[in-house]
Image (cartoon, rainbow over all chains, first blue to last red; front, side):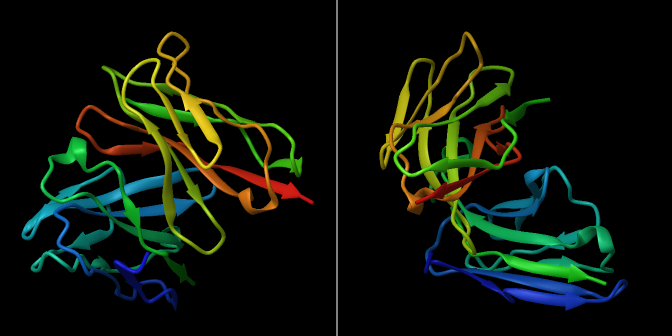
Length: 117
Length: 111
């Protein structure tokens, strides 16, 4: 969807390196999410944000850091990448102006495929 | 905790065949239920949703009915096309409103 841009689309890195995945929305939706997609696990929530400067942990937050200094950007950082973090990462946004229960109709970015060697 | 279980894939069908992808859930309360679809190389898109028991969600010829008594939300389509080949995810909104996804079911439709 043209409203969400993820970068890079593909990244290969080495164990121990820091990696940042970017997510940018052209709208001003309040809720933004980071998921990882792995075979046999479906999508699992890493972190989410209800608004600028408000973030919260999801199901699998360990090893990841997020920030949201501006409404339109929600970067995900792997401070010291591990092989278990090899995955496809999806950013998603929820509808503005509603609480989380109303933000569950999500629009997803195209994904960032990360390989950690 | 809340969870979603989908039938194992891949599912391979011939064009115009009938499709069923099973989805069952475990949840406290009364969650909303969703089907998302992921086409190759893309992110997920909402396919349909149902917010209460006996609701039927429908879109693009796909249907799913929220069955509280069997805790199920099976996806059906009467006649699949090659363009329906994708990965389908069942999901529910948990008590906090966050989405919980199943593991996904790959559908391959052959001409």
